[in-house]
Image 1 (cartoon, helix red, strand yellow):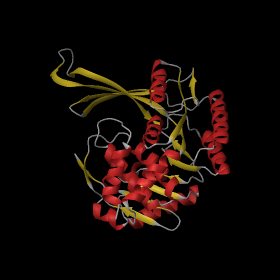
Image 2 (cartoon, helix red, strand yellow):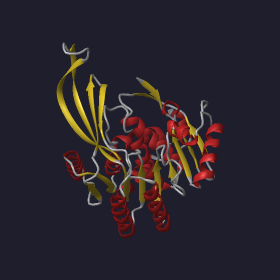
Image 3 (cartoon, one colour):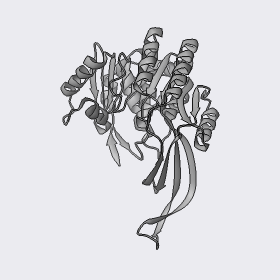
Image 4 (tube, helix red, strand yellow):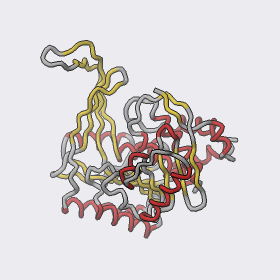
Length: 348
């Protein structure tokens, strides 16, 4: 399947950077300290082939040839930040179960700090198991709880996060919300207030339930579906004029600095105080869109932190999202691959 992302001529038209300057930005990623707060999960993949139908019921039989597990959700955002070079801590609440143990082990092996992940006796670790045949998803099995944190877990989590932000002073705090109950309204308000007091850059990947709870965010990054659900609008026509109205509507409610909206095959929109752009598309071979939003928010936050350039942030993060869509399953961006594509498309 092909999808349009950014056109090379549009990229170059909006860029005044040399290859050396782009390399410098990517090198500076290594200086950043990033906290990722939100719904961490484990993604399981069972790869196999379908060769016959079951005699027991009219369902396909999958002959499993390989099994993999990967960090997902907020954990995948953390992996993306780490892959780009940052020092990363993941802050979440998961279950005291085998899947939680496996998730923490994988994060530690990737070099992500896990000491601020709380394991609760009353929750299960969100786990999504996908069966894939010939690069096509056959079925997905979800093990999860969507209920909000219980008061005891909530207070412990808030105290842990506020103390860590105060002591470690991260450059960026990313909120990755999958509506699994970790980022309940009170948690969001306390964290956002503390980050603003300390001057941390905050980047938000929202979902429907607490869509408008992230008042004062630096970067607010919904996708098109989330815009429609969160603002209760149809938004059938994607144009610069319509997207400006979206930003205005969001800003009246959130008083945030930057709107970044991923528009799938229609590209990406960004608006700040003095700049507003809608970047059109470039053809890619899409294998799987899972996790692309995680990659976009991670890349956008880090590029903005280094450059304060919202157009460059939008262009590089959209490139990153497109690149991971060429892989099957949830995978983090490869720094060298993104660097070379950014130089090829963005340098003058």
